[in-house]
Length: 219
Picture 1 (spheres, rainbow, N blue to C red):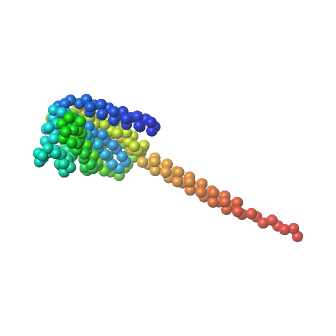
Picture 2: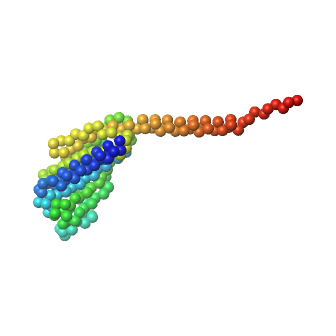
């Protein structure tokens, strides 16, 4: 099972890398990976501008025009990107929180190899067994952008990805998944109970071993 998970994760990563490396020079490639946990959904968003639009994208970030991309400018741009994202959990809007942003050097962006990396997350409601649905929509700079979106293989075996549905442009991704918590809790209780019974049996056995009936002495 672990080998299958590793193989699927590598396949998704390699597919995204190959596609990212082959995107057109006039496109703004936005690749999103969705990682679902029991209590949280994490988004990893990589934005890579092609060479012919690199200067335009740099201008969106470099608001003071000094030719440098500072951390505050990167943070402001990341928040602007988040305003263009929408996440729903079981068809209810969820609030995304920015966790991290990494902005490359201007020269890297100009050469078509600079990737802006955003990390964001949203809290999931208290876990309940059964089927759930997460929908992610990215509308940031649709006039010059192409999109990729994939669900990562969950690290928690209680979560099983059932289906992934995308629109034609892949700026929208809907993930159906199944969560099993009751079964895991039942197994934990069973193991705990079994250990308790075994310990009790050992105590009783030890007590019986120490008890020796006294033999009657002959008169």
